[in-house]
Length: 244
Image (cartoon, rainbow, N blue to C red; front, side, top):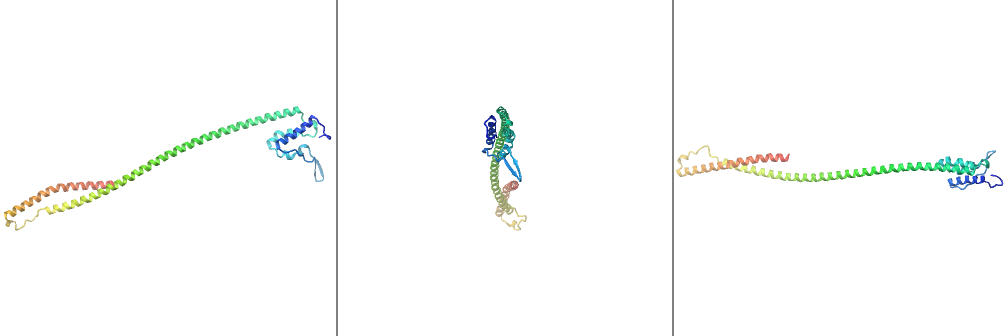
């Protein structure tokens, strides 16, 4: 800067460079001392180097876009600083670049939103499918439980019927044994008594009637016995089938 400072267009350009740096970093311009010492050597710093604490706070994108313009605005030689017309042109170019970048970022954001929306729809459809499958499995499970309950009831009924058949079979065996004993008692003796010729006609007639009655009774009981045996055999077959 000129000492004493003189107000010109170039001074406004210098101030504009400081405004850009302050706007980007939110740091008040506080330039370092223009002279630093490294050992016994003295080194002069330019205006941009004096503001390194602000430059370090900028992002890489901000540096690529604004740092060349800031460097030109902070030139120590006022003649090397851009004019106001050149500043307007440079700012329009930066604005165009920002709009392009924002448009690209907006397009990318829209694509990302579309992908997220599609993923959400797919997730919703998958959840609906899972819920439908779960409902189907629940219905099948309920049906299987009902069928299992019915099978248990049928099994209980079969066991009761089997018990009744066993009892009926035991009763038939008792009846068969009783009838068999009765038939054995009703069979005529194979050896006739030696005293038969001495029996009176009345006694002989009574014996003949008794024999005839026994014979008639045997003939009447034999079909019933055969029928009972037939029923017993069929009941045994049914019991074995139901138990298996």
